[in-house]
Length: 299
Image (cartoon, rainbow, N blue to C red; front, top):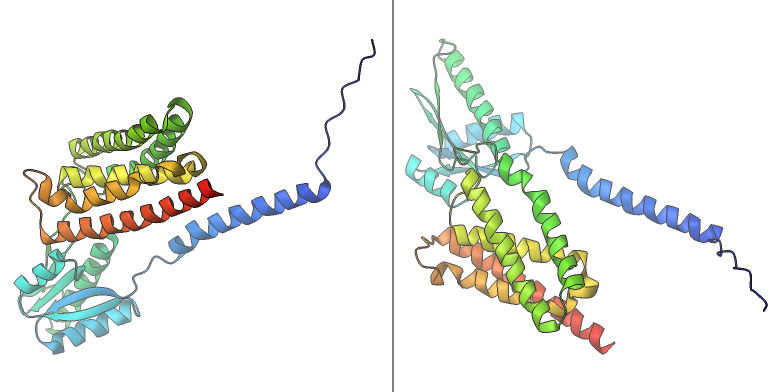
């Protein structure tokens, strides 16, 4: 009996190897630019700041802010502290300055941007120092700070929320991989695709609330995390999960109606608008994914 000697594996052509190296270099370079470029210029740009007082005071503060950070701030006038606080709570401005003969009062929202709060605080100190020197009494003008929308007391730096980003991203990939490889049957895969992100999102939200890293409505936070997990899973394994794209619009619709159907949820105008915008975006993207899935099936 004749035996056939095993053939040697075909070598990868040099041109293909060079193309692979160049392609990997391009991909890594694009990722590096995408992550490093935004971090290389972290200064403010057009950040809205309110000044309590007449327009003349707003113009004076605007000149000082422009000298400190050219083009960094957009100054608007507020009639009184109440209006300034309302503007901060409605996310119209990041901070507000009140100039008075007895001192400078600063209203901030560290939960919106700790960096802006620190930067505006430094400018408030400079304004108070300049006012004291102009009065011939350096250091006589105090600065009072009121954090209107602070970070949670138990996590003032937001470290817990930032650290949970990686587990959430990995969780979405793990969910998609397990459903695609360990669950059989389209119906059971669909059920798992709905239940797993919801269960994991509820668990992560519970941990973040337990650690004091987030505040507000629990179910709104859990829904947002579940949506993020689902998005990460679809992006990581779209070839196997595109048939379950209909789940995304369902979660989007739930995000929209959640403030009205969840008992005990103290929904505010800001919460409702956030849920509506996020849910509408999820519905649109989910419908687009469903369209792609239908095209793949027909192809």
